[in-house]
Amino acid sequence: MLVLSRKLNEKIVIGGGIVVTVVKIDRNQVRLGIEAPGHVAVFRQELIDASRQAMETADMSSSVAVGS
Image (tube, rainbow, N blue to C red; front, side, top):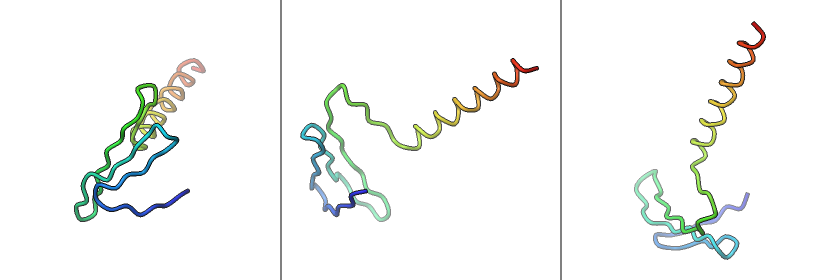
């Protein structure tokens, strides 16, 4: 993992097409702006985790129903 320090309004460029900007810093929260091409999906990790967990739960439920 690359760890970088940035100040307010400073940017990080990823792969030439994605720009991450520090938009706001407030106590223990940092607000980021992300500019990316339309074909690049950008998700928060907790949404991916929740979706994965819901899919696993659904798979387990259907396995139990089929096995009954």
